[in-house]
Image (cartoon, rainbow, N blue to C red; front, side, top):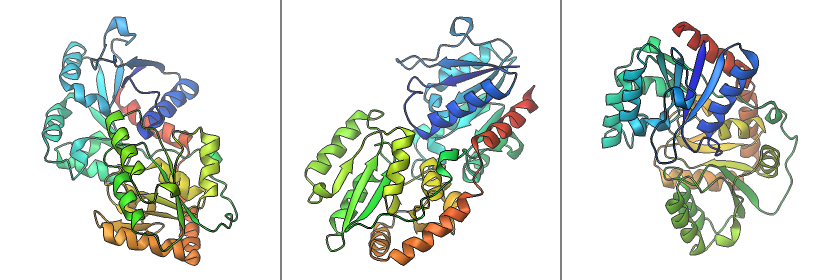
Length: 341
C-alpha cells in the first residue's frame, strides 16, 4: 500500500505535530513495506496534490490538521481521488479548543470533517471532541506520542542554586500563556527564581515581536532567559538543570514536552486543559483552567517548598514509565491504517 503524507510547508520546524509526523514517517519507512511519500504544501498555502506532486493514485492519504485551513483544496483533492482513503492527523483544531469552539474557524473545520475516512488523535480528550462533532468512535484512533529513549533516565539529584530554575518548552505562540506567565512572575519578587524558555518564534513572527517587546519593558527581565530552539541533547541538559517545569498553556491536545520533563524527574505545574490530565493527572500540579491567581500561588509554593517538588518529581517519573516508545506509537499507527487497505 502507498501512503502519502500531506504536510504543511513548515513541516521541518520543531513543533510537536511536526515531530510526531516525522517520527511516524520514519517508522513506516524503516519498519514497514509501505511505499511512503511526502506531499508538501506550497509556501503560498495551496496544496499540490496529483501525479506531479509524487502522490500515488489509490494511496492512503494522511493529512496534517494544519492543512484544514485549506479545506476547499482538500475537498477538491478528495473529489479527484475519491478511490483512495483519507486520514486526518489531528494535532490541533479550533473545534478541539474550548476557547475557540464557537469560532468561525471551528465551524468551518466541522464542514470539512466528512472529507476523511478516519482520524488519528493524540488524546482521549480530542477523541471526545470529535465525537461531539459527529464523528463515530470507531473512526478515531487515540495514538499518544512516543517518548525518546534518551529521556527515560532521570537525574538522581538537581543542582543546588540560590534560585529555583523554572523551565517552559513551547514555541512562542498565542495560547501558550507566555505573556500571562510574565505577569505572574512580575508579582513574585519575594521568592528567588529564574525562568528559562526554550522554543521557536518563527511560526508567528508578529506575536513573537510583541512578546519580546513585553519582556523588554518587564521589571523582571533580568531573571528571564530565552534560548530559542535547542537540539535534543541541549534540551535534555536544560531539563536536568531546571527545578520546576511550568506549562502556562491555555490549551494542549497533548504535550510531548511535558512527557519529556516528567521522564527526567522534573516536577510539573500546568493548567487542567485538553489532554494534559491524561499525561499528568495525579503526577503533576494541575490548576483549574484560567485561574491565574491559583497558578501564581502554586508556582510560588513550589519554588519555596523543595519537598513538594521532590514529591511531584517522583510521581511524574513513575507515571512516565507508562509512556509509549515511538516504536509502539508507530505500531499502533500501522495497525489503524491497515484497516483501510
